[in-house]
Amino acid sequence: MSAQLSPIDAAKSIAAKFAVQFVEDGMRVGLGTGSTSAWMIRYLGERIKDDGLDIVCVPSSQRTAELAEGAGIRLSRLDDVKWLDVTIDGADEYDGELTLIKGGGGALLQEKIIATASDRMIVIADHSKEVGHLGAAPLPIEVVPFGLQTTRAMVEAVLEGMDVLGWEAAVRRVDGSPFTTDAGNHILDLHLNRIGDPRRLALALNQVPGVVENGLFIDICDVVVAGHGDGRVEVTDLENGTISEALMDVEQASNIFANL
Ligand SMILES: O=C[C@H](O)[C@H](O)[C@H](O)COP(=O)(O)O
Image 1 (cartoon, protein in one colour):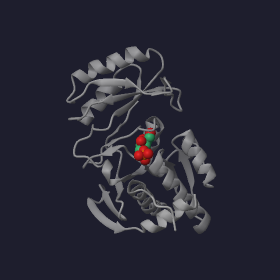
Image 2 (tube, rainbow, N blue to C red):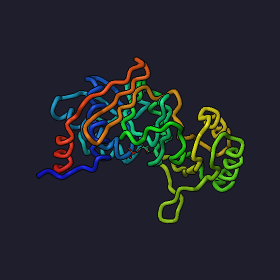
Image 3 (spheres, protein in one colour):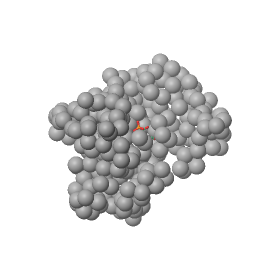
């Protein structure tokens, strides 16, 4: 008997499996970070091994680089490939315009760079990440270590003038110490509850000295592949203006899980 995936993990797995079908020979591919991206990396590795798929990939984090190397994926640096055909990545939330909150895993800076330097960004997620209004999930922002608490106070002052329902900026900590990103910075998690105007907020946050980047991805994502625990995937494609549905094999995802 195969090990059972939870419905959420099955949803992530089938979204990832569906999305790797978009990757073609010769492509330069950006690899996201997080648990859904980890599935995508496994499936890309399979396509390379089984179908001889010939691609070069740019990882968005050290963690992703290690996973990709383990999956037999050829890696390069963004400055060497210069531009990417597609980036596939997860998200913490997405709305109807495919505006995203990202950075739950702390990789938002490199993720935003590679997604922006791509012809196409495809988000893979379990369907629970879809929201009417962004902001139930904390919005991460990356800040430099110098003057961390002063930057935090300046960010909270900016939040007071914004269309949000919460104003707390909390330093993300691991074992009591500030979490450090791959770029050597820290993360502030903004607890906003509801973001009325993501565009205005993103611009205002990036004006604060010490803020390197925010986790709002606006006009960057082109396609969302959302998985459901029962095997359905919903594909929202902004370029074509279409929403389509497909059925994937959840049992197969569970078998892969059992063999990990
Ligand atoms: O920094 C991390 C990323 O933005 C992730 O893509 C995001 O947090 C979603 O992660 P997961 O796929 O684990 O839900």
